[in-house]
Length: 231
Image (cartoon, rainbow, N blue to C red; front, side, top):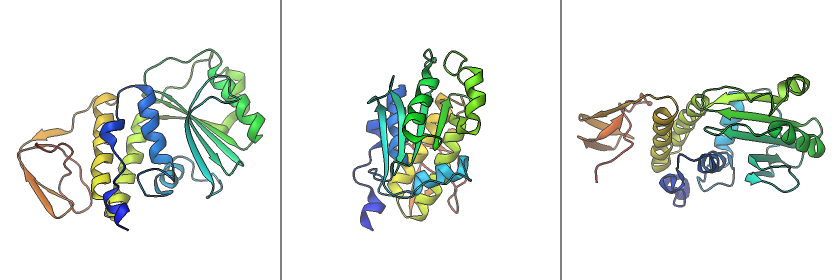
């Protein structure tokens, strides 16, 4: 429908910031089926399929929260509840160090509320795991596959897949915003610069710009995608 095409409430520029909290809010907004992106379960489904293909979770009554602190010894960066039957914690560590016993405290919360039906995802800058003070080795071995480590490069790859789907849905503005976030991750975490100046660019098949800053992405039938438009 028209809301999917123009996504009127979604404003990535307003949300984005190099701080941990704002990055968590952005990721959570994409993962939230009720998010202002108007794409329903699309981004969450792509996320789960990319990282946890065999994971079986309820497809309805999904709640996504940030900074969950109620009944938690600490604050969970991103929390996803699937119909009160399965819980996912995403601990976002792009910059800060682990706190003492931080991850094991979240394990205790999940086991108290979901028994064995949970998953903890540790998102770090380059894929490094938590320290032993945060998650002792014996506890990590005990929870096994319920604990997973991913990097911001993995998040970038997920967002690229999301952008391909939003393009198929004709959500042009949202596609550009997602790819702008991709370029932010490239610059901030991967230390790569895919920006060039000049040339003409065909964007989403029906608009052409020239002499502007653009990233070089192969994207379906479009030669390049514009992230920053000249004023």
